[in-house]
Length: 192
Image 1: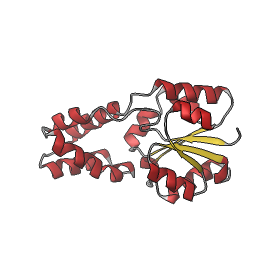
Image 2: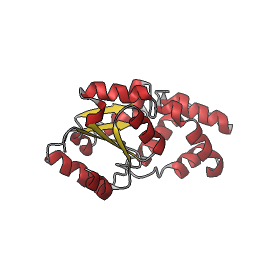
Image 3: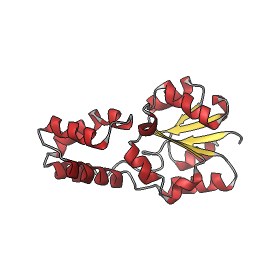
Image 4: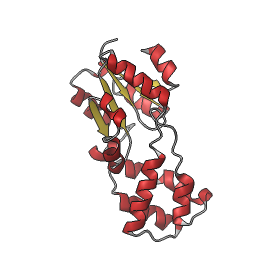
């Protein structure tokens, strides 16, 4: 295959976060009340909202004050919850990298997670990395795909993109990328 292969991170390279119970407990909130607020406010966090502003907003929604120390603790727990990488995904990345396929990462993620991810061994597979929190736009907006393609220096049609969310796949297709819903490493390997 020719061209770039672009991967989402959450629920593609890693599994779904395991941190929600610990985050709720840290705030002293019932998980059933915490989880909807966590997801409701997440888009702004992924678009560059600072850590303390996100956790403070979440605390406000739950009636719990969040100081700087608590915000830092919540950020650490949250990053840990998104850090469990899938062995099959890592094998796929390694195989593509060894075959000389240029790989890029396009992730809706806060900047604090981006700094953590940049230090991980698996990140070496990616020649280009775009985190929404760093650029202030997020999938499925056309702007983030345009930014990605500009950084890659190729036509959008020369990029294959994998994401677990249909809305992001549709956004990528609208921007001209050859996009597919992630159905696991074996399915991706077969497509490629």
